[in-house]
Length: 284
Image 1 (spheres, helix red, strand yellow):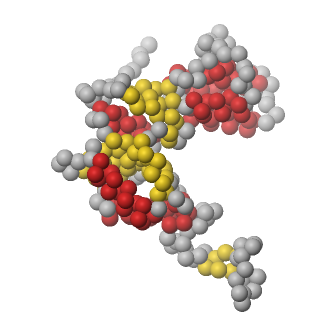
Image 2: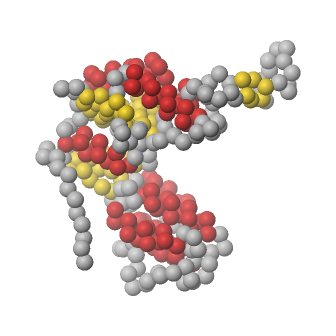
């Protein structure tokens, strides 16, 4: 049984946002209500009658055959994505070969893209009529919540202004500091102490529970989507997730202290009409 379900890549999100800014597209967001209940099952799935549900003339030991997907099934997310993909293709959209959660509808004077992350959809394009039309079709087929202009997506706050689009994770950072007990910590000016060199897992004392360090690394890695200033430090510290020590944890807390003093930083996509792909490299 296949259970994998794709979600839109972060790179795709950045590219679409950059294009939307350069071409002054509309950017809207939708949420599909009870998305997983719309999936069609390929396998035969049976379930016990839930507690509290009484059906006349039935034995409590009897089971029921599911006609549709249900929350909690391993294949629920995959079947929902398949259902949505089929619907969008029937509506004239084409699935990208580079990202199976990006759908595009393009004509001579119109371009509309749809980014899919489970039940969250982002619509970006130059034709507001087409955007409203696909919203209406989606609402008829699945029932949606129209959130309007894109402001918050996947833990990222999105602020649009004349100067460009800013992506930042202020709430995510505050929650991270709160969860790790570092909200009241003293800020520092750099994410890494360059005078201290962490080389191997043999340095320091092994942590009693290494999962604490691993979870923290996972959260910091997600934060690098909008905080390129901590990329090197987090990448370096991630080398020690197999056998972290107290020194590695101190290094991770150093990153948290740096974040405490720079919560509002993020990434800016400047408003430039001349859209060009630029690459940078450093050679020592």
